[in-house]
Length: 135
Ligand code: THU
Image 1 (cartoon, protein in one colour):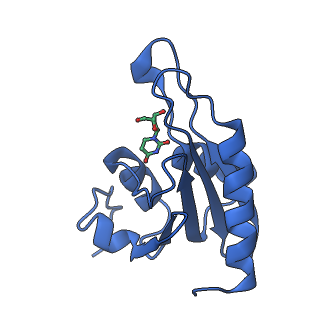
Image 2 (cartoon, helix red, strand yellow; image 1 turned 135 degrees about the vertical axis):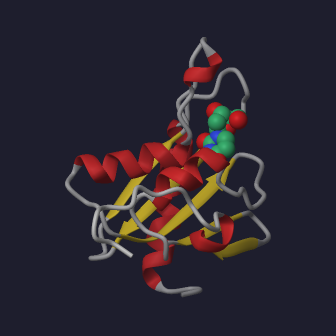
């Protein structure tokens, strides 16, 4: 929820990751911090490449850091960028986030304003593998 102390921690972690963004080509730096269901925080930045298409977004870097530490249940992700405006996650990141949590809160923090949305609203009807015996 808005203004809770954990959200402050998430914003701090996302801003610290933003400082590490590797974006010499686009100059568009992004930081993200994802909160696990049990209150853990994992951050990531965008990492570009001279072969542009190999670039990985901040949201996926943060998610993959968390998954690499054994976490698979998430509550919230905070995104900040060097534009200073609320930055919505790209379509690819929405799909990758939806693999783990449909009810993820996405908090897009800008200097003067912020936007909040549920992942299920940003990516309705996400593609998912249905396991046998599931409705
Ligand atoms: N980028 C992100 O990190 N997250 C997004 O959701 C959109 C785009 C990065 C990728 C690239 O390094 C730069 O922003 C410009 O597209």
